[in-house]
Image (cartoon, rainbow, N blue to C red; front, side):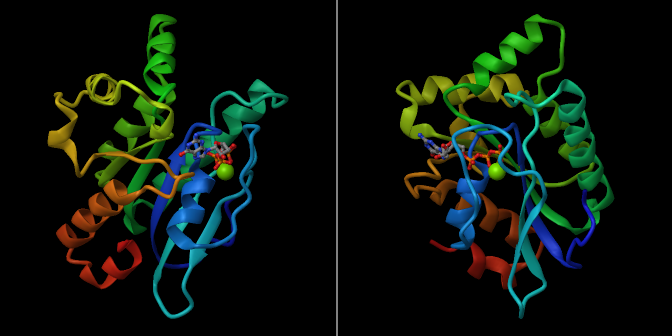
Length: 206
Ligand SMILES: Nc1nc2c(ncn2[C@@H]2O[C@H](COP(=O)(O)OP(=O)(O)OP(=O)(O)O)[C@@H](O)[C@H]2O)c(=O)[nH]1
Ligand SMILES: [Mg+2]
């Protein structure tokens, strides 16, 4: 599944299916990326690079529930995503966990109640274990009314002390569809700067 990876540093977008990774990708790169109303649109990593630069954004397939996709297949996708991140950890400058701001907390709580580790939380901790700087892009904020409360709840579930405002390099409320992604760009700039990669700031300016 993951052959043909271009040899360069990257920012990866990971997350459940249908949270808006590809829409965000389009917003970040200006490339036409296939998006869709149904989960499971992206089946292969989409790499977007620049001919002259050793840098790319990668949109990975989503995991979690997808209508019409078998449990076995879903598990396989998740295993592949985990392996991709593990194998390329040295080249991943920032891991962006994209979540659906309206649904994430409820889904996390439902899985926890069923005694499972929620995908989003698992992925967040996994990236941190690999010491990959991590940003949670809380997407679809255009659908969220109780903004601060939602974001504080999400921080709580991720083990980050509320209020969310003190985690600006980690929690970025956005609306990819509306083209409102500045908090994510700001977080990426912070991480690039911290890694002495100011040469990449041009990819994350608004
Ligand atoms: N309201 C709202 N909808 C959004 C936003 N971003 C994406 N969507 C919608 O969410 C749906 C899924 O978007 P995709 O970008 O295809 O999601 P994905 O995470 O790439 O999905 P997979 O490839 O299946 O993993 C589409 O109908 C988008 O239009 C947003 O900021 N707000
Ligand atoms: Mg996609």
